[in-house]
Length: 379
Image 1 (spheres, rainbow, N blue to C red):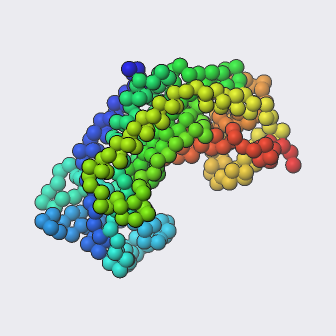
Image 2 (image 1 turned 90 degrees about the vertical axis):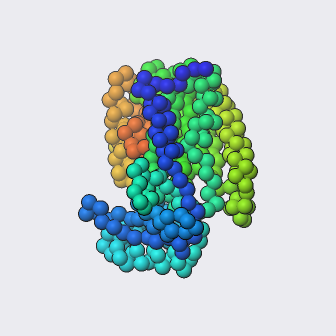
Image 3 (image 1 turned 120 degrees about the vertical axis):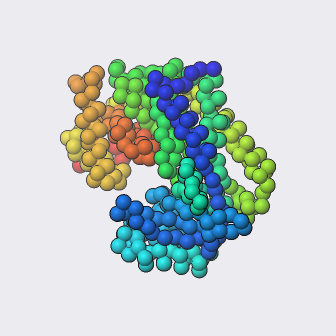
């Protein structure tokens, strides 16, 4: 087996965190008519709380609602998230009454995913981290790690952890191969094959495995089009099947998914897709920018429908890319430069935004010639 850990013990820290949160996780299935939503003050700020009323010998539970769970409650109630936050901030009593009225009149079963508090008093408390359908299929971060890590360690690609993150929405793991490397668009542009894995325990996305091409000089990552996703919603979405399955059947279903992920991760050890993307990067270096770079960045923002802030971030990424050590200043700015400029933004983005910038790099690389001309050619 290969050691996939990096010098910062990133994987070890992730495993410790996952073990800690697993010990505190608890799920509750409850009809909304048995729930109460209320706003309390905490440090002079509104804090949402769900109260699960005592039932069947179970005590009343008080659960603080995190930001993601609040958003899910608002969306389930048919409210825009920004509007819901404003209403709670300015009209908390009325907002609580509205939420509770919807829960009573539009009663439905929900899964509330929680973390228990470490030091509970007489009344059990914790954090509500997700407000989901009772059909939500729990395939947790530990399940993903259990299925993927052994295969990663045994792989001939000799994977090494680049970064990991766990947010309210997702867990992310990204690795690069120590063996599958090659020269990209420029002489100094050494690239490495990579793989990424992500999962959401809170309904914020599918289980995903995706290819990455790393530019080693700055560890920019571009997500390739080699992506596999598995949904948390089972075939029970077509009926109530999932609700009546035994725990044994559900465990067998998850075991099947683990085996699929094992095989998928194994397939990413091939260098075929990596070589194909290397060739694309080399060809992209021939797509020269024929306008001022600032104009090209503005054009890129229009073609990819980026916000003003995102477009500004691309310009910043471009300046950092062409200013880095080893960049060939005598070479004109080209499409490959823009790929690195876009993915460069992901190096400093919030953990939940990194995927966006890495995928955007792939979009630039695979952009249709007509769209690229709109970016690079004078009108």
